[in-house]
Image (cartoon, rainbow, N blue to C red):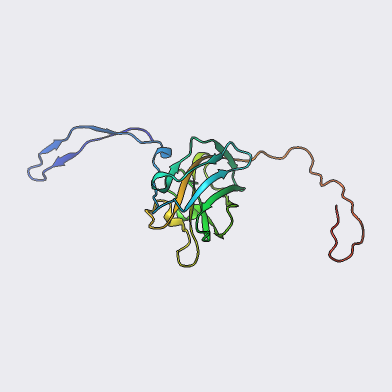
Length: 212
């Protein structure tokens, strides 16, 4: 992560003469600035119109983005916790009502790469609104990182969105959007654990609802 200096030494084995090049400095960019940019054939007929993460400041309305990709890391953030799922609420515009899938990638190890093991997919879906989730494993690094949400048709004739497509130049319709999340450890519970006392009727008839 620190700046490094490099130079080249060239030595002729016979008679042993050497020459040393100039010195150059190479600095390491922050991993948050190093993510690939995917693209799609078009998002005119299948696109994301809203992404919301409950209990966060992410509630983002969006239109079809140029090239099928948009960076919304400035549109709020969400704190998520290791060993707990992220819940992503999504609304889409689907002109032809073709079944689709929603994929979620999270950079768990801060290497600026969305690997296949950092991916979950939900589909086929048909409604305009829905929800998907991604489980943050206990081995995830804490701190700020990036989440990518993608959408693509999923009707049997078109392959379902896969973990290897985070950086793809897709020939299919769809869209990708990036968001900022912060991975943390959940606070420990405090005080005594109590389930309380519940009560209900002791008998019910078939197909009847009851309240606890």
